[in-house]
Image 1 (cartoon, rainbow, N blue to C red):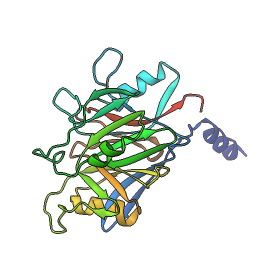
Image 2: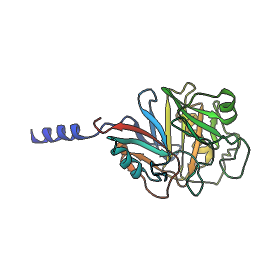
Image 3: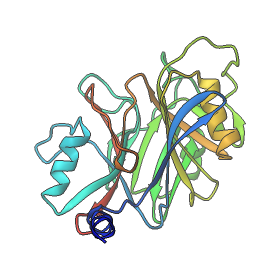
Image 4: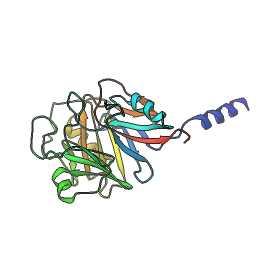
Length: 245
């Protein structure tokens, strides 16, 4: 009876999470994947606190949300940034543009074209290749540009090599065509672009996927006891919940 009562108390006291996360192994690599429902979850981007300084860490963002009676249910770094944490490419938060779209090739992973834009809109979240994003001009409440694309219209990025020796911890996001299914992923061991892209294309069956970053990749996923810390971040994507939920 006592054990049953204690188990019931812990169940009632434990917070509910709007996102489903799990640890998986695919082709001998370990990943944490988190699937969200953009029609139900309050998914959005964060960069600067009211003071004008970047949040930089999940704990800082969660503390700021707590002052408004809210909390993070999930978060991940969401795009490349400069030393001052300003975004490298397009960045839109609460429909306010902070950085324009970059179209040209450039050094580094961001400029390994094609790159893309993650767009969060009304009841959906989609990944667009950058030229497609510019031609279709989708209505976004939040958006972040990063690169390279991992999966483009159901095909792996053409520059990814199966025998690549470049391995890092990597993270990114994939979505189905209409943006009703969104999956975030982070590798738990160093992987190549080819291996990471195959996770989204073959295992998750997502036609569009975008790389966020590597080596500094971090995730906040209480459901699987993850609250990564480390180097300061720039843009952050997260799900917000009321503290009472």
